[in-house]
Image 1 (cartoon, rainbow, N blue to C red):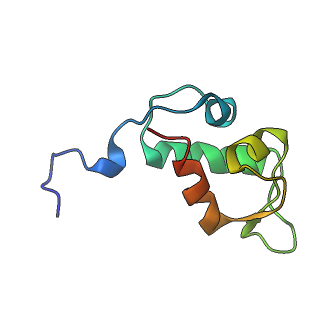
Image 2 (image 1 turned 30 degrees about the vertical axis):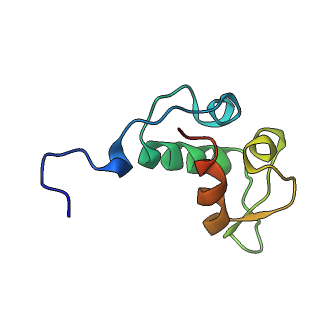
Length: 86
């Protein structure tokens, strides 16, 4: 367990790919901030499936990040976004 006051890996600022930056803004930023901004974008642009809120329907920008235009489950989303962080 991380000691209090130390930066965990989760909170380290990450470099963001150009495709992801088009959605969440320029980095570097921690994964937590990337996830927060991703959800802000998804809600603002109404990319959630109204029938099943766990599914994200990609628009042009999200399709570049996810690598598909097919709906993506919110649990898959985190894995797909990791490919754009370094």
